[in-house]
Structures are given as structure tokens and as C-alpha cells.
Length: 89
Image (cartoon, rainbow, N blue to C red; front, side):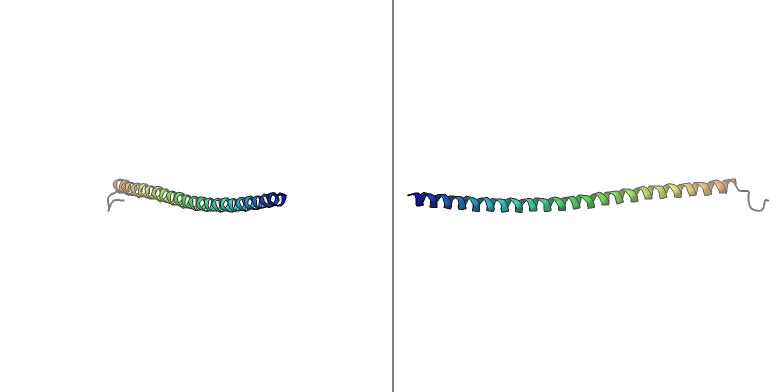
């Protein structure tokens, strides 16, 4: 009877230990998966933010270039208006 109880205790202990180790491995695996997915999402967000910044920069550049072209045309128009006619000194 004592041997059976000791054997039962030993089997229960081993069973519990195996179950605990399995649960630990599964938890570690889920943790690695979650971290991997988080890293992928962070990288995706980083690329998205970079593209948005590039788009914003190019839009700002285009606006500045348009303003510069408009200013240049206005300056040319004013110079033409204020220059003496040809043939006059």
C-alpha cells in the first residue's frame, strides 16, 4: 500500500512536471510569436511613416518650386515692364 502511494505520488509528480514544462514551452513559443508579429508591425509602421515623410517633403518641395517659378515669372515681367524700349539709351 505504501509502495502504491509512493508510486502514485511519483507518477503524479512526474506528470505535473511534464505538464508544467509543456505549458512553459507553449508560453515561450507564443511569446516569441507575439514578439515577432510586433516587430513586423513596428517595421511596417516605420516604413509607412518614412513614406509619409517622403511624400510630405516632395509636396513641400513642389510647392516651393512653384512659388519660385511664379516669382521668377513675376520678376521677368517687372523687368520687362521697367526696361527702356530698344533703341533708347
